[in-house]
Image 1 (cartoon, rainbow, N blue to C red):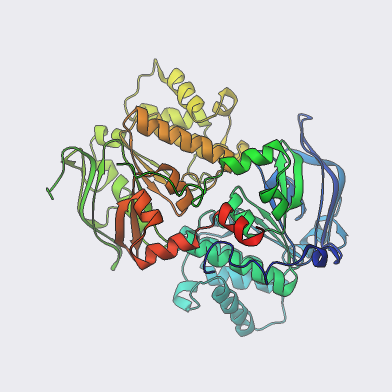
Image 2 (image 1 turned 135 degrees about the horizontal axis):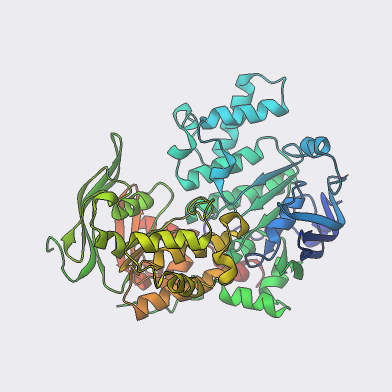
Length: 552
């Protein structure tokens, strides 16, 4: 893809061609309740035809993932379908027995989840897991034939076909690589329907571009129907033929992508689009203003080189983070940005070089750092699904951090309430376990856990990637307030350049473990100098650019 929306034209199918085909998916009057009797999805209906991509958008808790899961015959714990019909490839899913559902899953409908780590056994090598999956569905093919199909799909999703890579364990892959393996898993049996739940959330813009092209090409070439659940409206604008906007379990608006993004009718749809960060729309953003260690810097890094075993993955990194500054760290999956952030917080100690807080060098391992240093630098992990203890309530997880940094037991309950309120969570969330929260709510709880320590430096590793645009906008507002009001300093690791344009003062661009460009956010985003940076910016989707190219 040469730039946002460049698939427009030949690859964009006419609506009348899609409408002429019998639907793969037919949903009507779908209604779900939970055990308390509250309705969580009400009277939802839609169709998806061969070759059509239906984008489903809405805030966390809108019901979009719940609806998507019914296409696989799954209903979340504590919920039940109380009305309506869900037909997939002519088979009624509501009321079907488990044998019929198993026959459909994989062959007729497959699923790509938001959290790729949930799709794989951490104790088994990737290739063995894929071979086992294919063997369940095809007992006649030889190992060589199955392996050829794995190689074919790996190449399609831009993963190495070498055995060394395929024989790695899941934890040895980056988040973006693991998500691409999950997508490959869904494609192995060439199903006519794919349900994709935030499949590009963990990917950098270059990998995202490849995956979106792949999904579009497969749907077009093989007449695959796709339900694409996401909070990223720029992705939906780029890939979807039709869009369904959901709120509080109901369909707010359902129309072609062009109608949704060029002439939205519902006020809520307009609010979603207005809340979405957009690189092109924000083009007028203003720039926000070697001694061994700069005592005036919140954080200093000198000559940092990090390794995994004998392999060096980051090389000779130098930078200073000023007080009150947001420094964005961007680059593709595998560029080294997450490894660098883990070195900063003390979770990856296999490195040379030095790290200093306010001019004072700290030990490599977090456990050896003084209490004040551990309090002053906090980390928010990328995945909200694995960063919270599943056996502790939100309040208990936050309380552990509060106690660990020396917080007063007398003020603990009030400070927990205050920090939950700041991230948009209330009292009912304090007593909830992580599984009872949406992905967005879990991430906000993770942010609250870090903020309760009242840090001076906050390291954010893709913290908005799992949030819908409304919640993302709220979190970005919160982070801006912290930067402005409390002189909080922030290292913001992300692949979303549109988010960077809204928050960052400066940007470091990483490629192959090295910093290839550094500068003010406005300069790097709108006047990049390095060819790699130009590629990243060119591959970043923009609602405005897609709208102009596809429909205007």
